[in-house]
Every structure is written in structure tokens, then in C-alpha cells.
Length: 102
Image (cartoon, rainbow, N blue to C red; front, side, top):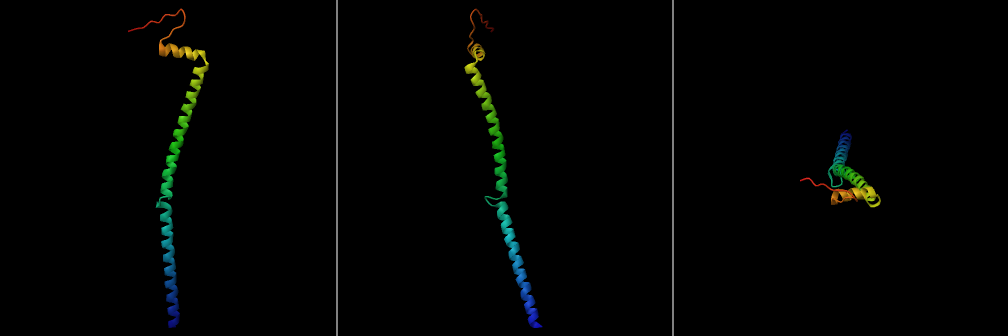
């Protein structure tokens, strides 16, 4: 009877040690996945930064496309060239007068 108690106690102790080791290892793995330098929190911050930068890139690309279109119009279209010269340099066409108001 005494040997059975001893075996039973050893099995309980073995289970306790294994369960404790399992719980500690799970806590370690979870904390490493969440709080480490390459963990989930760091990933979430990087993901936010990536989405913000992606939005900035899209905005810059759309502005760039508008500027390219405007530049192409200014280079190739005489109407835009004449309008730019009139507005920025005060130029006039033949037989036109410019009135300056002060």
C-alpha cells in the first residue's frame, strides 16, 4: 500500500512539474510573440506606418500626374503658353493695350 502511495505521489509530482513547465513555456512564447522587438505590437505599428505612407505616396502620385499634364499642356498648347505669358509677364498680343490699375 505504501508503494502505491509513493507511486501515486510521484505521478502527481510529475504531472505538476510538467503542467507548470507547459504553462511557463506558453507564457514565454505568448509574451515573446506579443512584446518582443519583432512581436505583434511592433507589427501593428509598422502596419499603421505602412498604410499612412501608402496614402501619402498615392497623393503625391496624383499631384505628380496633374503636374505632368499641366507641363505637357504648357509645352505643346499655344493657348496655355499665351495665357501663361499674359498672366505672369504682363505680355500682350499685337494690337492690344494693357491697363494697369493702381
